[in-house]
Each structure stands twice: as structure tokens, then as C-alpha cells.
Image 1 (cartoon, rainbow, N blue to C red):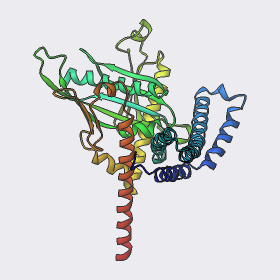
Image 2: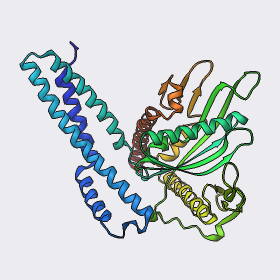
Image 3: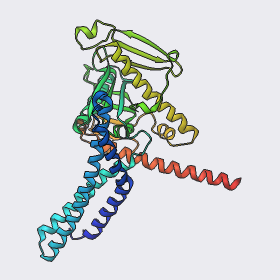
Length: 385
């Protein structure tokens, strides 16, 4: 502790707090809370359950942000007083407590800073996640189910609501694919960095000779569409097929033509939905996911025209963005950010915030770099003109 400069640490913490408060725009947050409170007070709010849940969820998130800023500001003031009293009274315990507290504050500020880096057009949305089995046979199907469980456990750990919308089971074990929704503010902003190809290396539990197997799974993350998105899908652009649901389920699920497959003919995007009991519900859910994917596609096309970063990030991730190794050693490593941990079971149990935060910081750095390069190109073009 002899080399610890409390004044410097406190100054850095206050500076970061001020930059976070500025980025989050506290006045805007208060105005947003006032507007959402007025909406929440409407007597007919719950006539539209989906809209009501969006309003209450956004209100809760905005109130939590303001409360967290207020608490952090109070902690900064309190720890400064504690350190000064410790020095005046030569109380070593108080000084130690103050140093520990300013370190804890710095960590909480680092966590909150992540929120300011999620400034993409759709980052504040809820997320629709699809996991798909890739190369690796039954091991890949099992790995895909492990990833689905990992994300659902992550949502559970953070108190986010989740809903499985479609599951296609593999013949021997695991799943071919699954689509699920994570309902929480900024769920898309956080989970969007999870998109890409994931690789698992382990001794296959399905190989009676105990050989090592490498398998792959793909993760796709799209934002949940809202009524303001205006994604028009003409009936002539889609083909709708119905069929009996498969996998675990009651008699009504497996013996009626309630499952729906929608093919968007211009893009060949296919969405299946079977976890609801009625064909009408499955069709509505499938259309919502199709709109989400078309929304991302439209955004990517616009980004390419404007030379924005979205397409560049996608290309730079390569075929494998994260590797999960269970044999001959234990390691999960993100190949973009370099973030890694040997706590593989914790990761599969949903402890992935470290990977997500590192991915968000990496993405922000890539965007800044791309923006600087674009500005340099534009400046060069102007000088030549």
C-alpha cells in the first residue's frame, strides 16, 4: 500500500464518473423517466401487454441508471471524507478501508462504462438469439445445446426474462438449432458481440474410443423489432409451410400442424417456429424474427453504402471467434479480444460477462479506428479535389 496514491486514484475515479454521467446524459434520463412514468400511469396501459412490458422495462432500466449514478457519486464523497479522517486521526484501518473502497468504486465505474460504449442504432433493444449446429456431427449438436444453456443461464444470472421460441432437436443428442428471445434493455448491445462461429475441443462423450473431437456451432444475434421499424414484407415475398412440431411436447403439440416455416423468397432467409401451441402464435413469432433479420440486413446494406463499420467488424471476426478447449487443458479464449479464462464450467454455467465486456470494448475500438480511417480518406479526397 506504500506506493498507492489515494488522491490520484480518487481523481481518476471522479474523472471517469463525470465522463460516464456526460455520456449517459443525466438530464435526458430524467426526461425519459418522466415520459415513461406518464405512459405507465395510463389506465389502458395493459391493454397491449407487449407494449406495457416494454414501457415498464425501459422505465426500470432508466431509473436504475440514475440511481446507480447517484449512489456512485455518494460513495465518492464518502470515501474522500473517510480517507481524510483516517489521516487526521492516524487511523490505519480507516485509511485501508478508504483505499479498498476507492478500488471497488473504480471497478463499478468500469462496469458502468460499458453502458456508454453501446451506442449502436439497435443496442438498446432486446435480443433474438439463434444457435445452429455446424461441423462435428453429434458433438456439434450437443455443443449447440450447451451454448443455448449458457446464454439462458447468463440471462437468468442477470435477471433477464428469456423465452425459447423454436427448437429443432437432433436425432441422437443435442439440438440442430434453437431460437430464443432475451428481453432486457441493451440485451442486443451486449449479446451482439457473441455473434460468430464458436469451436469446442474435447474428448467426445459419444466416441466409445475416447478420441478428441472438434465441433462447431454458429451464433446469430439480431435486435427485436419494434412497431416503429416499419419492415414491410409483402405476402408475395414469403412462402409459409406448416407441419407437426417435433421433440418433447404434449399430444396437442406433436399431432397438430402448429409449427410454421416461413421462407423469405428475395433473400432465402428461413425462419421456423414451433414452441407455441397454435399455428397463429407460431406464425406471429416467426414473422417477428424474420423482421428482425431483415432489419439487420437493411442496416448492413446501409452501412456498406456509407462505409460504416458494421460490415468491417463482421468480416474481421473470421470463421472462429471463440474457442472452448476442455482437453488436453481447460481454456475458453476469445480470438478477437484475447480475453481468456480456465474456468470452463463457470463459462458454460453462464459466467460470460468478462467475454461480453471485452467484446464491447474491442468493438468500440474498432469503430473508432474505422471512423478515423474514413475521416482520413475523406480528407485526402478533399485535398486532391
